[in-house]
Image 1 (cartoon, rainbow over the protein chains, first blue to last red):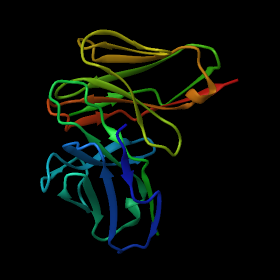
Image 2: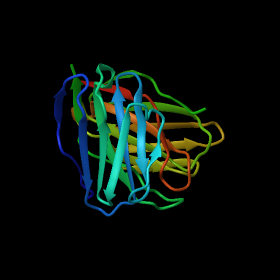
Image 3: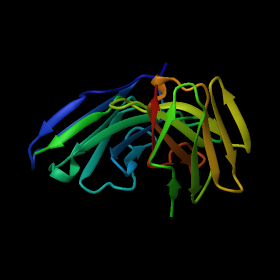
Length: 115
Length: 111
């Protein structure tokens, strides 16, 4: 089974702090994603990466950056945390398999609270 | 733009059948996925449709009509453990890099 591991389940940070969320997958997937999930808004894509050192902005990239130095690891960085970034953050990975059933595999999520 | 609609909440009784609908208007279409998400947990993959018709997988079935931009997830013989949110997602590109999610339907199964 694919395993996507996020380093923290719960985090509490102060406004203005730099925050790192780490994600590791063990299935050699090409694609990795960071979503945030808020009640009533569903999952919204922050950034994704289709290869090492490659990144693409999603729908809501403002206030975030990412790093993918190794294929299995994708990090989300909040340069200066703000209270409106309090949310559940979900990392996901998928195989790069055009035209076929290639679902997203999610980590367990990190619930971040910014005070 | 991209838009996916689902009912916000549904309630059903243990042992019954429930149908969760999903309508979509997206810039592209390369498959529709259903995920189950229990409270506080990660979404897990349930089913995939890319051609019109019904896909059956045990107690769960999923239907797709591409011409209508419509899908549903059918859950039979409901169990208490089926209480969860169900997310509809459309893959809008060919490379598995661009998924659009609906808001999710929270299903409560009552005894």
